[in-house]
Length: 216
Image 1 (cartoon, rainbow, N blue to C red):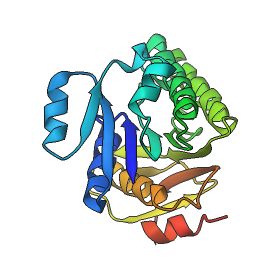
Image 2: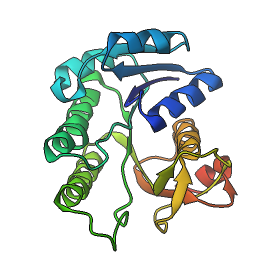
Image 3: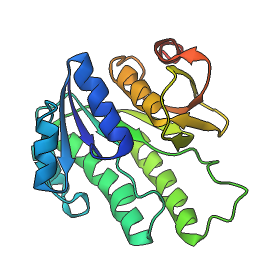
């Protein structure tokens, strides 16, 4: 399989790339700086240089023309509104259009649990972030592509344990980024899991078993 990752230099995107390469897949991604290409190439990963917020759907389509699947893991982490709009909003919409133009049918989006941070004073920028995420989830489901939306709970930088809880609705808890990346890789290798919104948190089910449990 050949997979293009938007957000390949991010925490989850980088772990996903490593996981896919270890499986023998070809991985391509978007980086912001030329020196990042050198680092990725040393790991057997090709890349294109560009600013996600400045790319058009047409320019994205040229980058993804020969891939089997697109994964969008880039995100603003509830930063300033203009960044959220560009990365979490317009970036996803452009990537969806690019996938249609390039005839890449499989599109996976890493989103966010709607309950994340509830009960806290999030502030206007964070509320705007959640609103954009919701609207983009709707856009993905209406795209006509072979889409999948993964909503992980609170992301932690700790070793993965290889077990998760995965399904249409999960409580907001926490999960290691390594387990999120491993789940994404497993989902990409199980094309029968499609056109679903799946929520993901820590649990006791082996990742491969959890993915198979969500077959239609």
